Image (cartoon, rainbow over all chains, first blue to last red; front, side, top):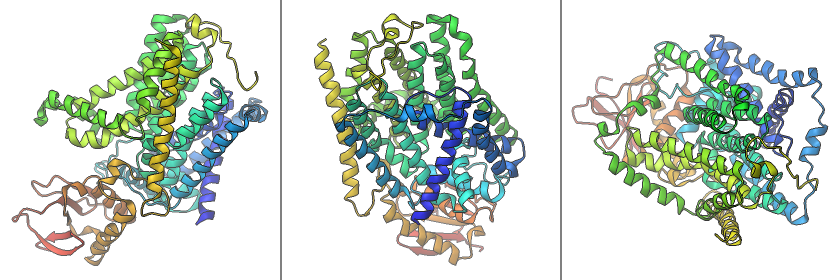
Length: 462
Length: 151
């Protein structure tokens, strides 16, 4: 059993290597310790796109070779463009850390290994994971042909959900010839750890090592998201996407043009993960467009890459429309909540009660102190890039709140099941921003406003 | 606003956040399972996976003993709160085992709005209406398996 999960880990590592090739070839390398997390995201996206295109184009049976081709294309492209050297990666990952930071980081790594060990062999717990796993299973059995044919009996099994996670689970499952449901929890928790790698890694560039190391331990032990990751909710990928959006939007405001492409990477990840992800990616695109129109029109043309998630989503939605699959959540949003007999006042009250319960739960209680303080400090220090990114998070949360309140589902059921996940979607990004606002090194571009020169002080080399 | 006070609050927030996560992990590590197991508040509503799995196996065994998935089963759970998400999890687990051999999805009778998505199986809490046309085929651990009266 242990050998099997070691092999699962190896397959995921190979997917990461492929993603590394893609981000090097396309200039998406963030040049920091978070690179490995970005690489896995790129590998995940490549697999998801390969499977989606295979299914949408009617070449279902080609999903596995298509995945291999697209995963192999990344490193090949990096070699062709003479960007295959691993030296930058090694120098990015190598950190000069004090002993205290090494100990804390070591604790985070040990905890990660223990939790991954727990995820290994775990049975499916929640319906969300089961839905993903059944699609992965269907991919390996008949390439989803029974699923996505007109009149299929499986069209009501949340068939409108994108194929991102199922694609990776199926890829691992088929490569190792093991059942999809026995690897789903492992893959889910692996993606959660990538969130820690990205959040913690990005902080090492902007705060002192002890703070970054402690935050990394915090991300690993963020059980409010981790339990979903292991227990069966794909929302972990939305948390990961929103965190990546926050990191790259803040960098974009500081004047980093490459951040547009990395923003697109996380927006595509969100789009491939879940319908809510497409919602967030859309809001992101609108917010970035609005920000550039108001503050920095000269860079507006560079934001075209943020249309890519829309293209991916459009292809998928048109395919679903051809099958006459009900767009469940879209229908929900179009339905007046009053049609369920529960008025908006009652819904608002239930929402507020549920929010209070969430914010005072042990896993999130600390954020009541951290987030307001971090936002206030960022404002006082005129760290505008962080302030603007807090604004983005606020808009994401507000937009989802409106959508959430309009859903015609039972509001009590939503408060119990949906709201904790929605909060988990944005909480890691808020933690990152708050730590950045409170303890981050100020850089000139932050004070000078958007478009200013970036002179990031790198604590690893200072 | 005093910057050092805000920084202290932010620092306290980080410590509470990390401590809260670790303590939650610790509590769950001390539970019935020897390993860390996922158990959020929502998952808690349907019990630990190690507690529920035998029930899953019982239901699947009952279905298999009655001839497999395609006979139009109705599975009745004892409590409403075990329906969602427990029923979905249960039947998608079953569906994983059966897919794609039984592509006929069961239709819920009138008033039973819980199609399971599982071929040939529907699920509901409580009990079916007396005139629903179902008879008890088997029961175990509070879960009853119904079949149409004509089968």
